[in-house]
Amino acid sequence: MACNDKDSWVSTDDPIGGARSGEAWCVQAVGVDDRYASQAANLIEGHLPEFRELNKVISRDQKFAPDEVARGCPISPAVYRYDCGDRELGEFGCPLRVSEAGRNTLLVFVVPEAETERIFAGFDDRTTAEEMECAGDACAEETVGLYLSPSDLSDSSLLRYWLYEGAGLHCLRPADALRPPQTPPPGERNAPDWC
Image (cartoon, rainbow, N blue to C red; front, side, top):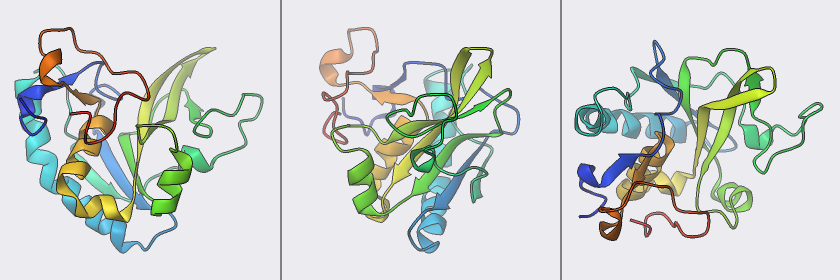
């Protein structure tokens, strides 16, 4: 069982942001030529039929595929937001605290290679919380940011891996098939070797 087999992917949580009405993903270039955002959006759109199929295979109650992939994102990347007000700066910047999350459940940011290395040095993940839906002091992650470099766009299997991770899906290794699904602790997962 390899991660190229859709049956080896599991959802360990509710899909990011739930199945909000009009759900969309967005793509934006930050610090790189805009053509990379267009390229990423086109590649992501090519994966949408696969994500729609996952709704049937993994769970009929969860929605993994967005209704659309928009060019341009409505908010700036959390990793470049440093003013958290009275809150402590997180490992990956400041997610926005909102009373109601926007329609985008996944924000894909294409950033320079050096930035992915700087921001995520020592981490095996490229996702961050971008929006936290809050009621008082209780907050839940509703919108995820996925950070890609231009070189990620030329590696089809790596891009697919990151998209699955961004959508809230995680790969099971063959030895894990008999165990309950869980996300490995940081440091034990390396894309795409973890699968």
